Structure formats: structure tokens, C-alpha cells
Image (tube, rainbow, N blue to C red):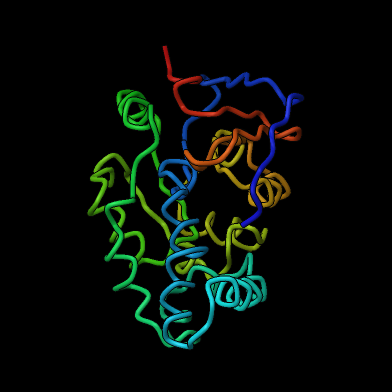
Length: 230
């Protein structure tokens, strides 16, 4: 939820494509514009929640922010059924009401097409709830690019937890030393790094409405246009 600030010092990108067999990509903020998610949770849900409980926008946002933080970086954070029950709102229906805000980042489709033109295995790895994945794939049409799509719900841990990565290796056949994983969240990349992922990439502009924020710890690009294969 924190808004990023501009940074100038960050690691240069030097991806050794010949050393990579598997490409794993996060969805929200990496492939898709995170503006939808930020607006949904920070503005739209508080509006609906506030009307239901006769709260001002500020009161509703403050109340929900505390609830969000209580489960941040866990599977509950992305569990639509959990939030429907906890907030007394039909979260799935609310997402569908504003699904026109769901969008694919620039250069993503070109990048996915490049990867598919190689012999590399392409996988979507997301914390998103399966219903969220369904809604976003229906809106964007990018699902056909991926050989495998895995939600953290299948593993039982969020990507921020190193246990997720050990669980992923049990159900997805790949050599972690020859795999690239891209994500917009440094905490997730740190867990993947701790697990031993061979190649990591940080996406520095997850939302079209926020400034670019490069990572000082991981190779970092604003968009996939910077690393499209020759």
C-alpha cells in the first residue's frame, strides 16, 4: 500500500538468457497495471464499506487499512472469500463492477510473444486468488501464453514465504538454477533468493499512476521493453 518514491541507485540488468530454461512471472504489478488493485482496495472497497457503516471516506479507509495490515503477506490478504466474510461485502462482485480498470502493462505482450518463440518454459506464478486470476485473464486474454499458471492458494503459502518456493518445486518441474523469476515486490524476491532461484528481476513501475522505484538489491527494470530478447 505504500507509495514508492524515486530512486537513482539500482542494479543494472544483465540477464544471461542462455542460462535460463524457465521464465516465471508474477501477475499484479508485473504483467498487469497495479492501479486496478490499489484503487480497488484503497478507494472502491472503502467507499462501499463506508456507505454500509455510515463512515466518512477517511474513517472507512483508516478502518480497512488496519484490517489489511493484519494479514499482509499471507494467503488471507488475497483470499476473496476471506474478505467477503470479514467485511460483509461481495468482493468478487465489486471487482467485476470496475473490471474496466484492469489493464496489461506496455511491452508485456511483446515480451510474452518473445519468450514463447524460444524453447523456454513460461509460467505465471501469483498470490492472486483463483477467482481474481479468472477475472483478470478473462479481461486481458493473456492466459494462452503460459504453459502453467499457479496460484499461491495451491501451495498453501504466500510467495513472501520461502516455504512457497519449496512447495512450488514439488509440483512444477524445473531447475531453479536455470529459472528466472520477475516480480514487483522486493519481499517476494528476497524469499525467492533465499530459496535459491538462479535469476531474479524486479519490476520498478508496478502502477501506471505511481513513480518508478528501482530496486537497490535486484536487477531492476521499469518495463519488459528493456529486456525483450533480440
